[in-house]
Image 1 (tube, rainbow, N blue to C red):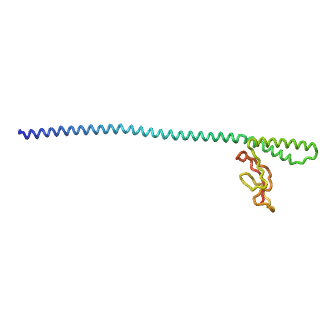
Image 2: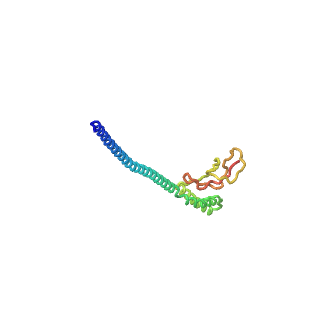
Length: 189
């Protein structure tokens, strides 16, 4: 073999070796990239899971705050309207006392009895007022269906406007801002 042929063979061998080295390096690089990608995937998955858990924590904490706020409001309402049932139970007694007071007294014994009934009536009204119960006695006011219940109507007389309350059949009561019983009224038409 000539020197040229030998040189040519050596160069071919060098190329083969260098091609093999390049192939090995490419394989190594691809393997490294695959490893990095496979390592990146679990990291990305874990980051996604963490983000989901953070979101879940935020939602649950907001829900807990809403529950606490709702409970606080319910406790305030319960305290604010704690005397509602008692007041509603006493209202018929007040009506009966008012009917008793409407009867005319003829003699001294009847006057004394009426005076005692007035004192009981006043003390009940004061006790209810101390709890925030107010009387709705709307004679001369305009009819408001939120506070009044019309039981009948009469023709309007001179100086009266339509929908004006001319007579109260039964007084109404309100506790703070809640109507316990609307006033039963007669209105002008």
